[in-house]
Each structure stands twice: as structure tokens, then as C-alpha cells.
Length: 452
Image (cartoon, rainbow, N blue to C red):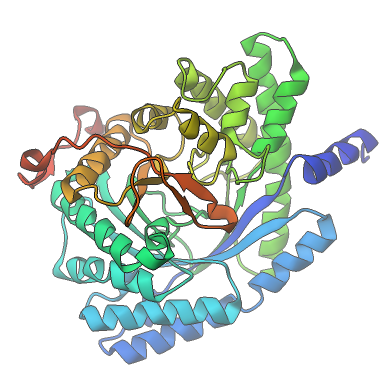
């Protein structure tokens, strides 16, 4: 029997607390599109995506109306480009990038992910060609997202790839300088990348995935923040239960939408990603959750402990609400997409060093952080290496999405609009790690990776 209280509570979550399903993402395998001829490959890629995802957006819109739950994004992820384009030259990869963009426009999705290379143990010549095209591909397309996995706990860290990605990020920033270097917002560097992630910019369709799949990412920081505020002066054990119960309710909404979308599209349901994904809207903030837990300001002492507790409780509550949980599943702390994080940076209580410490206990990493545009390549590489090391050492996913904002200095602001929000430019340490970075090779895997 439906409980009137539960119905009214859900209505309040949607109306007043920014509850939404952040994305329905259709993963599509492109292995059968491979061809020695770039034009043929691009035609097959376009045809397959537009056929399978033809009704994705319309289905999402129908589900929004049926259940009254906003579904903010409808997206597509595909097999990593470097895997299906192994015979392509750089011109061929750029053709593929435009084919993916054209397909995204045709089916009407917000983003398409999978301009991706997996180079955690080494780079093939094809990987190098594909990675070299990332700046131009992202500058010439609007909806295409790119990711590169440079490390795993089992393989260690490919420092040659880290060094290359520092250069790629700077080139992308330059080529999109007239748009606040927004190309870098569509590019992420990973350790231990998940293959079923529905969130951009890191989504791609993994090598062990089926022909096509529906993955859903939920949201709801505002709902959790409100629940904590209502809980009042309780101890931390009781507060953890409040978060778990709230995460359960949020995830049940995502599970419902995922199953219904999969059924209507006749495509298997994959996973629900439990992540608390904030927006620039006031109140829809992970930072606000932490402050409602009792911190004077996010970034102050106690922040990492509060975030660790939040992340753990979200996972414990969410995993009971879905038959299959995957993706990133935790609390996101993207600076530009979280009004509370932005405020903390502007107050000076939240630094890039504190953000790095926080990433050790949450998902995913240094995300949507604007840094001075004149930051040297090797300093960017050092930031990447530090963050990736946290993932490798702790057997967790970490990632870096930095925006070296061309022409901007610390204290300036970059404006992206929409869900990407705006970001204050954060100062970074300028002491160079170049001698360390330029040694190259691989940082060996940690001893605890030897589990066989």
C-alpha cells in the first residue's frame, strides 16, 4: 500500500530540495564498427549510435512526466575510441570525433563520452595518435567528452602518460581560450577508471559490457542536507542513519527510472551510480551537507572526517536500494558545480591541498578546478601524479579535471554556465617537479596489489 507520508516526502524532495535523476546514460559497443577505412568506420559509428539511441531522449522525457522526477541529462557512452580506431591516423581520429558529435546532435543527447584511451601500463602508437588529437577534437566539438586512464592499482602509474596529459590539458585550454578554456571541462585523467560510469566527462562503454546498456546516475545533495538539518542535535551514529535512510530513498528513485528506461528501450539495465552530484543551485551542495553536519566552513579542520562519514553512509544506504550499484558511487566535490565549494574557496578556507586530502575519502578527485592559465605543464603533471597516487595506493578511483584558464590569474573567475557553473581561480604551488616528472617510466604498483 502507498504511504501518503512517503508520497508527500518525495514531492517535497523534488520541489524544494533539488532531487533529480542526474543522467540516463546509454552505453553502446562499437566493436563491430571497426574498419581500416576511416570514412567507413565513421559511417558505421554514426549509424549504430543513431539507431540504438534514437528514442533515448524521448523516453527520458516520458519518464519525467510519468513520475514527476526531473531527469536532467540524457547521454551516450561508447567503446573507447583508441580501441576501435587502432588503424586510424590523426586525421582519421578527428573524423571519428566529428562522427560522434554528429551522432550526439542527431539523437539530442547532452554529452557523448568515449573519446578515450586506456594507457595505464603503456601506450600503443595508436593511443599516442588518439591522445594527440584530444585538444583539437574538444575545441571543434560541443558535446564530445574525453578521458584517459593513466594508472591502476595493479599496473602502477604510467608517468609517460601523465607527462603527456599535462601537455594535452594546456593545449586544450589554449585552443578553447575564447570560451574560458571550457574544453578542459570535457577532459578527465583517471586512475582505476570504472567501465560503467554514467557521469561525464569520464563515461565510456567498457570492454566487458554488453552490446548496449542503461546506466543511471542519481543526485540529491540538497535532500541529504535538508534531512541532516531536520535531524537536529543528534550524535554521529544517529546522523549516519539519517544519511543512510535518505540515500536509500534517493537511490530507489534512480532504480525505478533505470528499470523503466531499460524496459521501454528494450536494452538491459546496468547499474545505478549512487553519487551525490551537486549543482550550482543554492542548497544543492555537498559543502552544505558538511556544514549542516557541524562544520563552520568546508575546508576547515574536520572536513575530511565529515566527508568520509558522508561517503560511507551514502554507499551503505544506496546499495540496499538497487540490485546493481556501480560507476563512481560516492560524494562528488567539483568546485565549479557546487555553490558551497565555490563560497569556501572564495573565503579562503578551501585550498587545492585540502581538496586533495578530501579526495582520499570520496568520489572522485580534483574535479572542475580552475587554476591560473600560466601554470607550467610540469606543475599540472605533478598535480595529476599526486591525485592519481591516492587512487593507486587506496585501490579507488581518482581523477583530475583541471582548467588552466587562459589569461586568468588566482582570484579571477571563469564562467561556464549551466551545470558546469562558475569557478574562482585557485592558486597552486609553482615549485617545479619537472626533474621528477621527466624521469618517465612507470611508478610500480603497490605491494598490496599482489592479491592473486
